[in-house]
Amino acid sequence: MTAPATWGRDAGDAAAFLLDSGPGRHLLERAAPESRDRARAALTEALRPYEDGGAVRLRGAGWLVTAVRPPAPGH
Image 1 (cartoon, rainbow, N blue to C red):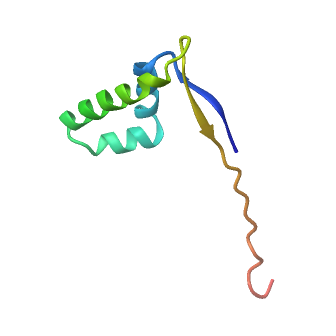
Image 2: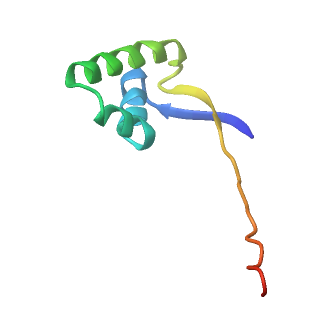
Image 3: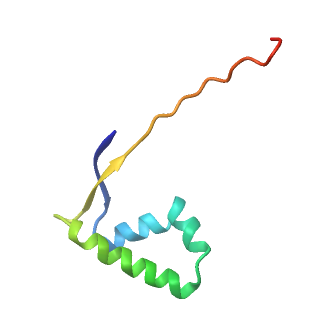
């Protein structure tokens, strides 16, 4: 399912949110410091076209995953 989502007040705020949490933080921790700065700047610029009325709005997605564990053999 996809839905409109607000990711920050402006491109810099949205880039900080995306890079300072979850997968973004995980990836940046493994990069050289100068690469981190370039990645943050590049993402900020990429998000600028989505600034609108004091917010960065992008389509978000969510998944609901369920599973059932089969009974162990002999039970």
